[in-house]
Image (cartoon, rainbow, N blue to C red; front, side, top):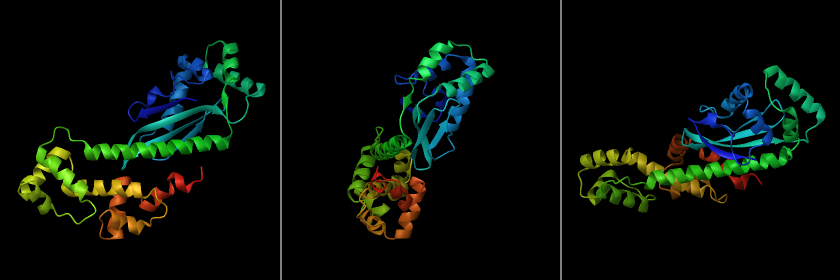
Length: 267
């Protein structure tokens, strides 16, 4: 079974040409008449406006799925896998496939296609769902890593801004005032705000929220911690404010985010 990561602007690359691609799909993808049909299905899997896991079944009964990798409300790309069947292929199924290929005008060596089709990967639906769940967990960890990179990336920024970010990270669980941070780096509040936004692309308040929410996401992995405890642990003074900021940055509430973490599923 192939596994690929497709950025949102290159879903057309699909699963074709990958090392573990289903030979049945590989043979048919060489035919332009079939490619147009395949691309239609792939566009459904990698819809940049969709934030949910999608699974499609093709005309041959093979399943493919895509798992979005999200950072906040933005989708960076999709983890895609599949080209597998839940049941062993039969001659009756292949006759139907042959008829459809003829309708599409696909010209290929049917004997080779038949051999490849009957060698398709077959796993149970339960196993496939477990595999998709693991991909979802992987996607969440990729998103966490992206968060950390966004927070720690310096991009040749001024030393004063680097020092300010270090101070924010060290004191993120405390009450941090903009004036205090500006004084720490020997800048006026006005100039510090201007320089910080230019260097990081976000305001002081937005950056502080990103740091705190990143910490909260890690704490949510612990099922023994209440969400209210986590809110105060990362520096928020009210649960309402924490929930509002978390939803704005992550795209879902802390409760919804925790419900999708691996320790809640039993898989």
